[in-house]
Every structure is written in C-alpha cells, then in structure tokens.
Image 1 (cartoon, rainbow, N blue to C red):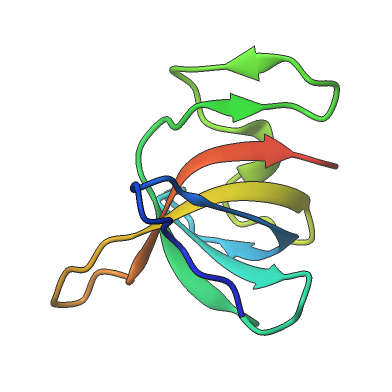
Image 2: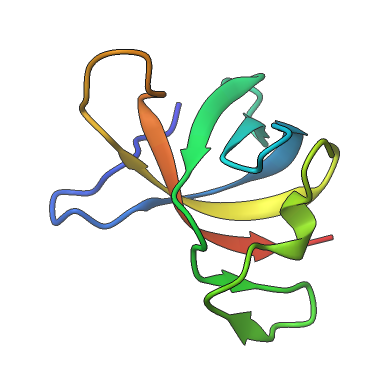
Length: 100
C-alpha cells in the first residue's frame, strides 16, 4: 500500500495505469503498479504541471495522456490526501508524468 503524503506535505509518487478519465477531465480512475488501488477515483486539480513521455515539461494545459473518456495510459502521478468530507474523492493528482 502506498501513502499519499510525506511528513512535509510532499506528494506521494506512484506509477500505474489510468483506468478511466471522466468526460470533463476533472477526475481519473487509477490502478497502482502494486494493484492495491484498482479503479480508485482521484480528482485532477485543474491544469496541473506535467511531463510528456519524452521528458518535456508543461504547465497551463491538461496532460495529453489524460484525454477525456480515455484509459490504459501508463503514468507516474504526484498524489496528495485532501482530508475533506462530502462527495469529493479522498485523493488529488497535483502533477503528472505521462509514461506512454
């Protein structure tokens, strides 16, 4: 099992496969390589910093590997706990590295 925030608020870095991106691109399903988070939903916080598969960095746009209504992409994510209540997912993606 992976922990989502270090003792200094740094996001956890987790590799795995996208199991789905919702139609408006604000949430994703994700399965970590260790398989313990199959289908877990996470909120995508706006236009997060991201890196493409060739190593180029971007900001101010949506990650191309998280196209709406897509799945199966290999990614590395920076994930934090939201510690909120209500209908929001418990975890948020704060940066993305597209691996495929």
